[in-house]
Image (cartoon, rainbow, N blue to C red):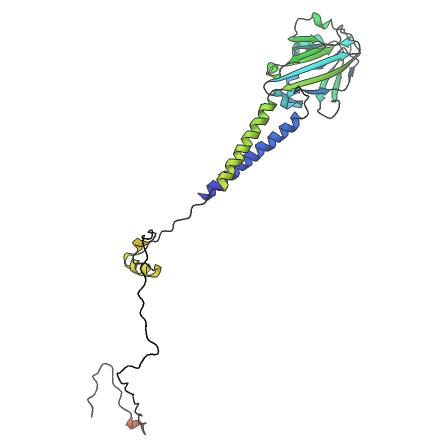
Length: 306
């Protein structure tokens, strides 16, 4: 049973310490937010000789590159500008976007990484098939397949895109080529503050509970003697009690009886009874073997004296 309690205490201590470390990590992450609680980032300038910059699957990219943005109560905001002014930003089904830009040169976002300073973006240039003349896409605002669109700003929640394969398209408002974009992103994760306080409170409670379990007083073990009935008086005598039934009994109230002692005279008078001195008579030594007394057989009666 002691091993079970010790194992339980160590398990609670491990979980509580992990929760406290998680709360500390979330606290450090919160320290990078602005006073309004939002995380802002600026991207490197994105340039392409084509007509558009496309994120083929926006939900997959966000979950892969920014996993902590996929929680509930999160909002993403994207500000896009060109040297000429705000750019067009739209969300559309991936198949519709692919068919619309099939004959136009454009760039596809492959990776984006979290780093200090401007975030790097890796692009892949896509050109029409050989022999096919490049085409100029129509004005993006005139298309009807957009799920969500805006000029210069687009805001959405990752939960809104869960399970949908939507493409993010960034273009000039007139759809012309030679595109240069200045991107800024903002994330508001509403779950970070509740998770931080929850981890801190839960970790402290678990650590306190683990300390109570590990430092609990240990009850002394009870020793049970099993003896034969005829050995009970012997065991009682060895233990210095009159009977085994008196073991563990509380002492009786009142003064304890004093043991009766008897004084013995050491230097007193000699007893009146005279002592008799014992005289030892010398035993005569036999001169020959014939003078030795005959041995008596143990099974025979002793011989009568001569």
